[in-house]
Image (cartoon, rainbow, N blue to C red; front, side):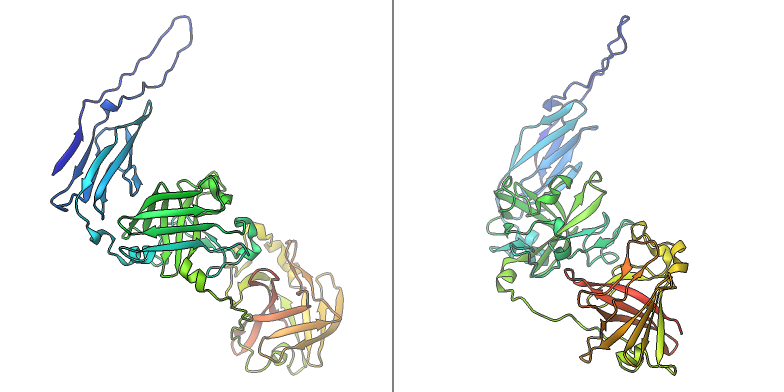
Length: 469
């Protein structure tokens, strides 16, 4: 093995200054001289005849070394770097000592042969297009406020979430959760605009070029990157991934990322949010390939109509037809409201009153009042509501015949207060509900979730009613 080595004896002197006429005086440690730092950089020619494998070792106790090895950075005591491409690599070393920061002399290593085995991995190919190629990525939000693949440019995960296809569905610890906001209803997460592009290349080296059109402070950058395919991490040097400005000062390190997912058309990378910015979390940025973006065709698709159990009949049968020709439904005391996506999947795990978080403001104390809110449908097309305070209203209703399970009201706007919560039951601007979900007890449908379609987000606020008679 070839060695590039600096070895010297390390010592620190602590001086206490005492004075009989003044209080104790304290001073910082003297700044360590760079000659006091012991480290080792070795090229392992047994592993790679071209010297592609380089081992970086910090041998100075109490001192942290940061290695900037061109394709990435590390502050590990021992770091193994594998250069896939031949060339000269200048390693910059910074020491963090008790006395301050010490910049050490850079060390240049020469790699004489390519070893493309280090980039011959499906993830490398997906990110770059393969050896000798490049691939350009765009943040999935354009100047028109359109996200072409994801529902927004940014998602939020717990600090222990990572590669979503591994572990326990992407969970590698105890702090695992996610919030996947749709941009249309949460425009505060990122300003719409042309964010520019970032291009990962394996044309002679692992190069990264970025054009930050929304971030003039970054501008155009040219750097390098390293993808750890096993650990599913991505580090960059001298270039930064595209990102919205809204979180600029809340990220621990913009050049050290988790890869959350990577396909031919999509890339998700996560950075750690500082605890001082609300709390520690993984901020995930969603990208699409330029090729996917260029070939994308918008779809003007109607809302989906997930199959629901109508108890073997029509919506009219479900709502009203009984031996008494009228059915009365009472607002559920256990889970009166929630949200679902357009396919009817609940967005919150609220099944009992104790599941509601503080911000929902629905408590046990509200239950006795909530169950007094009722709506009755009759098979002659009339509808009647009774509010918890005894107020009654009446009108008519019609149901759709096209399988959309829409209820349209006339002469009445069903609305109920949900206890002391800020939430309330109401209809859309068209005075409609959609039956989003049902549930049976035995052979009878006893639960209905009436959905109010959000005018901006792709979701329903749903109101849970149970059969009262």
